[in-house]
Image 1 (cartoon, rainbow, N blue to C red):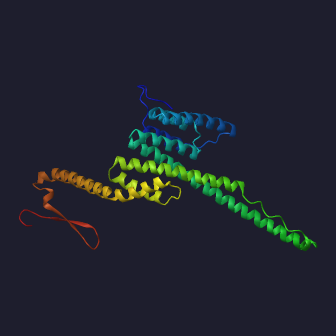
Image 2: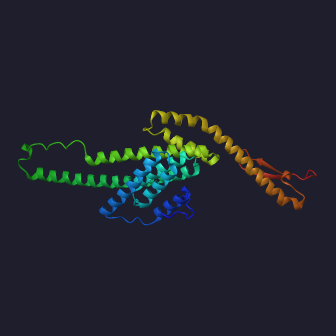
Image 3: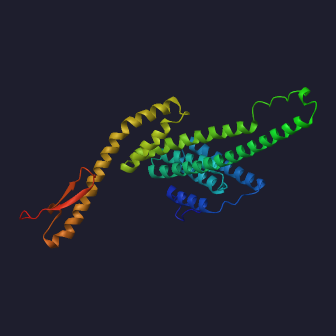
Length: 289
C-alpha cells in the first residue's frame, strides 16, 4: 500500500476505496502454501498492531492494521472483517467518527458476504448428505431382500456423537457473531457521535440489531437499551432541524428565481391533501386573486 509523499497516513476513506477496489477484483485463489504464507504475514502485522493499540499508539496501530489488510487474500472475509473492526476501534479512540463508520461498515459487509457464502455451502452439503443417505438406505433395502440371514444380522453400531465438521461450523458461527457484535457496537457509537439525521437514524438501526443478539455482555446490553431510549428524541430533533434548513435554502432559491417577476415564495401556499397525503400549491396574489 502506498503512502502520501508528505508522510501523512492515508485516511480510512482512502483505505475503504482500496478495499472496495480489491473486493471488486476477481478473487484469485492462492495455493494452500501461498495462502498460509500470506496469512502468516498478515497475522504478524496484526499482532504488532494489537500491541500498538494496547500502548495507546492508535495512529501507528492503524498503519499496521492497514499492512495486514493489504497482504491478506481478499477472499478471506472473516480475517479481513476482524482487521477492519479493529481499525474502527482505533478511529474511535482518536474521535475520528467518519473513518470509524467506514471501517466498521466494511467489516460488516465482509461478514454479510461470508454468511451468504457459507449458507450456500451448508445447503449444498445438506443436499449431498441427504442424497448419500437415500442411496445408502436404498442399498440396505436391496441387501435385506437378497440376504437370507438379514433378520439375524447384528444391528449397526450407532453413529459417533459429535460431528467434528459441525462443531467447526458452530465455532465459526460464534466467531462471526462475536465480530459482528463488535463492529455494530463500534459503528453505532461512531454514528451517534458524528450526529446528523442520517447517522443518528443509522445508529438506532444498529442498536436495534444489537438488541436481538444473544452474545452481548451485560454491560453492552445495558448500553444498547440506554441508547435505544435516548436516541429517538435526538434523531427527531436532527430531522426537524435539517428539514427546516432544507426548506430555508429552497425558499431562498425560490425567492431568487421569483424576484424578477415581482413575486416571492410568500405568494405560494402549500396545502396538504389529508386523503392522499400529498401537497398542492396555491397562488396568492396581492390583489386577492
